[in-house]
Image 1 (tube, rainbow, N blue to C red):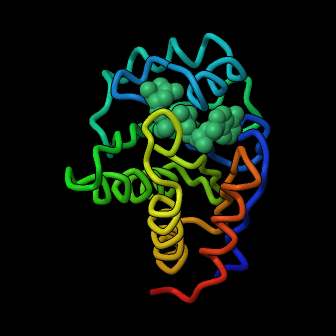
Image 2: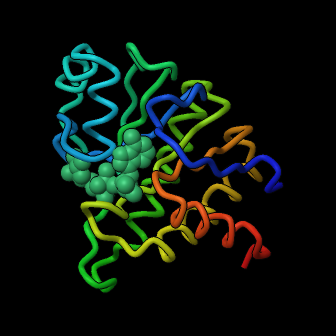
Length: 171
Ligand code: APR
């Protein structure tokens, strides 16, 4: 199962999976971090398409084309801001992954790359976020929603957290 989950250290904008996931905000109109990197690499047509989406709630996911990116699709999902863990953050983050996988299946994207959603500006603790990401990836693969999942970490530290989580048996 986990052979179909890989961890890479790098830039999500250079991933050649069918879809890449954007850690967006609820406006879906760009921002800093990975959101800014994706919009810069995809070009202005991405923002033009995003303007037609009408934003998204935290945990929702909406899809656009990849424009100048190698990936055919971008799946935009606003993750939760971390407020200490008692504001339903875990469920909302799980929804980001579940809705991204569901959309990937809808558009026929068989391979998908995720950044570490919510763990930057939104301050979600990386260990807790990684446990959710890996659990949801295992479920999506078991349900054959996608064929391969790639976790793209921007730091060695984050990649090590993912590798440790993947080394543990499903809970
Ligand atoms: N490729 C992969 N990962 C990246 C890249 C990149 N090019 N750039 C940043 N990252 C990493 C960050 O280092 C962090 O580990 O993505 C992770 C998510 O961080 P953020 O981009 O800050 O996303 P998030 O914490 O979900 O905050 C979302 O930030 O950019 C704004 O518009 C966005 O308001 C939203 C908020």
